Length: 74
Image 1 (cartoon, rainbow, N blue to C red):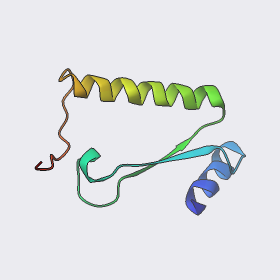
Image 2 (cartoon, rainbow, N blue to C red):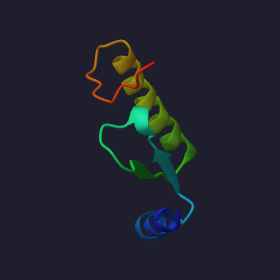
Image 3 (cartoon, rainbow, N blue to C red):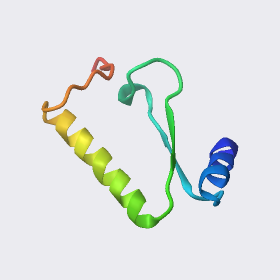
Image 4 (cartoon, rainbow, N blue to C red):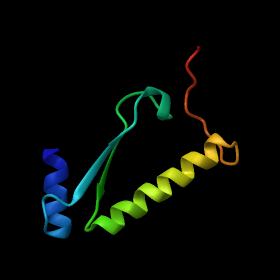
């Protein structure tokens, strides 16, 4: 979070203008940590980000977009 705050302060002038997205094992493609620091300057931009991510995940769930995340045995 410290790094995200630093990046937001440097890039957009507001240390609170960020979101952190962490992908757990079944939602990532490579081993290890998978974190996105997204710099956002307003509520509408955050809403747009979530809309785009929801669309991507919906396409993967429907099999219309390639999804190479590891599968857990159930």
